[in-house]
Image (cartoon, rainbow, N blue to C red; front, top):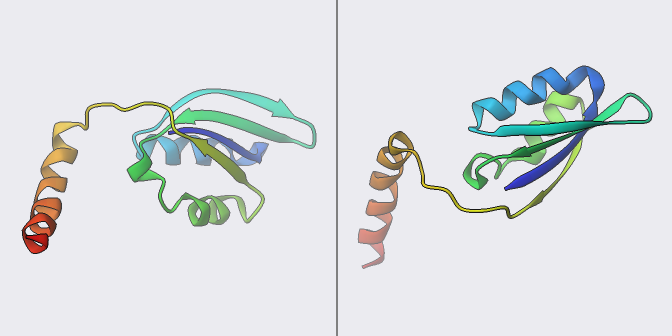
Length: 95
């Protein structure tokens, strides 16, 4: 997913670290009036399904974001190994 995250300037480091922990890539940033910045990043959808509450927590409710579909990538092997038992069990239950 492509994200554009608007945050107070003093929270940029916190947000960048949080995105890195979600397998995200920060692509750039823009300065806005009022001491705000827009961070442009790409993050896997699975990592940002609950991002609204996380962003509110980190920015004390002063951050916002928009998200659009970007592209597909191969899931890293360690993440595949974690997902297979969960989705394999669900598939068996459906049959």
